[in-house]
Amino acid sequence: DIQMTQSPSSLSASVGDRVTITCRASQSISTYLNWYQQRPGKVPELLIYAASGLQSGVPSRFSGSGAGTDFTLTISSLQPEDFATYYCQQSYSSPLTFGGGTKVEIK
Amino acid sequence: QLQLQESGPGLVKPSETLSLTCTVSGGSISSTGYYWGWIRQPPGKGLEWIGSIYYSGGTDNNPSLKSRVTTSVDTSKNQVSLKLRSVTAADTAVYYCARHFRSGIVGATRFHAFDIWGQGTRVTVSS
Image (tube, rainbow over all chains, first blue to last red; front, side, top):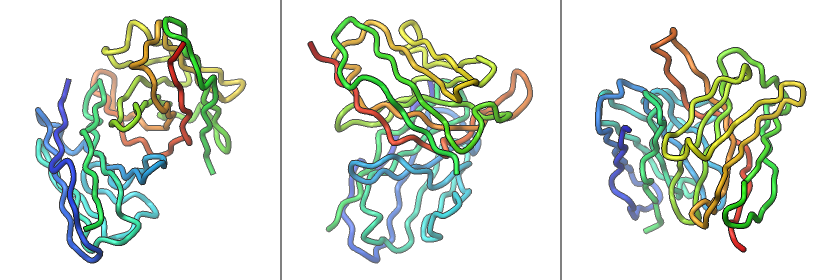
């Protein structure tokens, strides 16, 4: 199985801050890496697909980058509605696996 | 637009079988290339992929649960179903169904992101 490791597991930030979350795969997954946002008590929503593709309807302050084993999700200017938990997920091979999540909290 | 809705008992006794259904509306479950996946989330924890099924019945399941999982599809009802046998308290979770695409040639296919999710259904395993 491909292990997905996110860091940090949590962070505190202020509105307007630039936030970066990293995800590392235990082996190369090309760009088969997806990012989801889950607000408290809500359903996960797709933000970024194939490492850098912005899902329709997602604000442009979200961006993704990386290939191989190392990936990054960046929020350029944190907004109040962005306080949530973010998960990466590899779709390169079965079993599909998720990272442990990064909780973004208000500072 | 396409919507997914999970349904099933909210309480299951230990050692029994958990049975859930995901009904797809606003589109066809038989859309070429699209798989219908099950993902679960224990309380306060992360996401775990259970398995996915194609409208033709082809499946791909997580080996960690494989021996206990059965997925099926009913194209006439636009539904997919999940059965998880011999449940324990560790199976307590919110269960989601979600759509994802699979592309490529035989022997070199890749799944894509889960782009549409159901609202989820909470299942508690308890006597």
